[in-house]
Image (cartoon, rainbow, N blue to C red; front, side, top):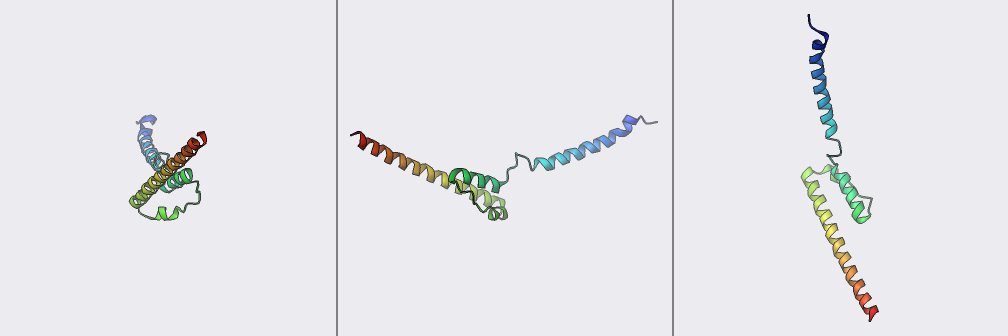
Amino acid sequence: QIHPVQAQAPKRMHEAEADESHNDEHAQQGPDRVDLASAYQMLNLLFTGDSMVDTLELREMGRMNAIMLVIFSMAGVFIFLVTIMNVFIAVLSDYYDMAQE
């Protein structure tokens, strides 16, 4: 005669495997798997203040093309903003020096 605990052991093993595969499905949607289009929209809002980004095209293009587009556009925006900020600081410092004289 099989003890009731032993009879339930294989069932529990299958339940554990099912739970594990269920957890794997959710792990792909968790915080460690960021939607590229959403990340691009967030970074664009952060750096440029433009919240009206069309991410539909980004979602439809291939993953590698989308990654390259995000990298190059964010690098371009960052370089542009740093350059403009440096020019602004230079102009302010020149006018400050002229005001001191």
